[in-house]
Image 1 (cartoon, rainbow, N blue to C red):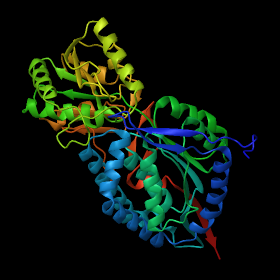
Image 2: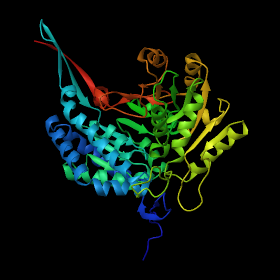
Image 3: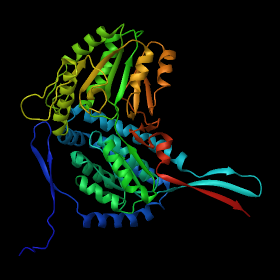
Length: 465
């Protein structure tokens, strides 16, 4: 006989964005299961912190190997639930392994104690201790890449991790958990919590020792306000409205246009560092627009499992209407569509790769984050106008400049209030360099040695005797 007072488990449907078919129906965590996992993590972290850094790194090395051994299954799962073309899923896994290798190779150096003063009556040193149990509230667009930025250095640093994958990358998150456990991470040092925003909300109620979030500015701001009173470390990797400027001294317009196009449409434009605004010097504007448009029209949109597909579906259905509203707003205000602009008929959350001209900053397209394969190309008369327009944003993640001259490009890059600048490249991340945002693009840094020490806290030793 059923107990009428038993709390009913919530379920969540995992939907393939390319076909709209239900892949799996999965139970969400409840308050009770979340609290139970937190207690296990609290106990497990104390033991894990006593394990040597060398031993922790050895476990992560096994995880690194397992990603390669299981890459076919992992890539197919990622494509099925998130929609990116299959080769891009393989690229993401390979990229994640590259970042993990950086942490394997460099973590010991930056986690070792540092003797500051070794002479005199008082010796001084710094040691680095784990934060404790941290929350990793991750994103759906690059679940492997943004995930390893956090949970790998966190685990190497001696922390336990409460990992919440996005509801749009849940199956990938389960794979990550399983492979970490298989690699040797204790079951009570890495726990996954399944669910939507209400589940993430529960993590904010717990007395965790740090919060690391990747996602939208709106959610990041909410998290920051919610946990401010806890006085614990937190980092926010948020969105961007990343500009690219093409100077008139560029030698290969077709190459610059191809790079810009890839920066716009890769992963269907669902990247915080995707190119979202293009500014082109008036002397080469028409030639650049023509080249970009020709190349854009050649893109093949469709089944992400087809190796010939360049652009797959959006991950979320509601994003179709959002992009349409941006395009419509731009057209009303005078913009012209050169390519795309429509939602194709049929199944799947697709949106045509789109380029608009005759754009300006009165249009939402040029001011609000798009997070899709849509871009406006605006003509500028000189570098000064480009600098003014590139800086006209609430975001500060990346900015790119294409030019024959590094000296000329550097003058622009120096005036960009962004965490990253690019010369003759765009939409890339390096494990060796800090990944950080300014203004509404976030707080704190992952990757580089700074991303190793983000998950530990220094303790100063004054030693006399």
